[in-house]
Image (cartoon, rainbow, N blue to C red; front, top):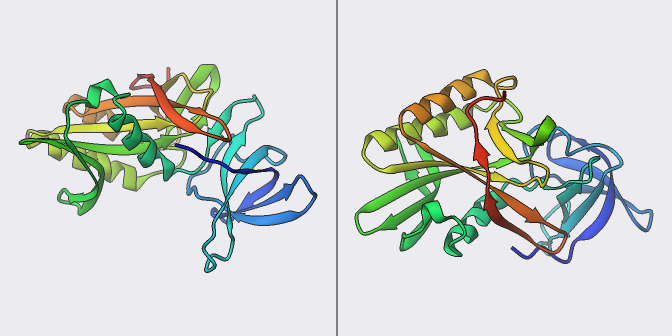
Amino acid sequence: MQLGPLIPATLIKRYKRFLADVELESGEQLTVHCPNTGAMTGCAVPGSRVWLSTSSNPKRKYPHSWELVETDAGHMACIHAAKANVLVREAIENDVVSELSGYSRIRQEVKFGQEKSRVDLLLEADERQCFVEVKSVTLLLEQGLGVFPDAVSERGRKHLRELIEVKKQGHRAVLFFCVQHSGIKKVAPADFIDSRYAETFRQALDEGVEVLAYVASISPQRIVLDRGLVVVDRQS
């Protein structure tokens, strides 16, 4: 995925979940849209170097969106959570994700399940279907461990329950962690943040739901998923 041209800036603060104040290299201060509903722990430190995109939509109150951040440890992270779906689809179409090869059609946001959800990606080939739920991971703990979620996620638990039901119906069900943080080397559920999500995650594994994790290479010009990571069922 090509990102440019992005505008470099310095983060002043993030607030009200969807807003952030930044200072451009010229000294001008702007309020920008923050396209991430999570806690963004470690990715929203005042003084961090950030990069912004610009929208040409005249109806937008805040034409700039915060896209990338360089963390205190020098890692690059993409905080635009919605880009995860695009990255995963691109990776599948480019045969980067070997585990999800062999499908002839990809559909997005398809209604499914008893809880009236929409699956992020539905892969199809003849009579075969593979339901893929994508989650963006940016919370880095110590020793390269990334965890999800970074805030309590009832919605995330619902998606896991739906994947379990899909698997019981005889289809492939995949939870895909799209790791948008260059410092993360492996992924686990965040028991200390949302123990109920972690319990449902482990139940999904027991029921045969597949879990994949791929990490992105990130620069202000380009972001692309390029390699798989290990997924563990606990933080230890």
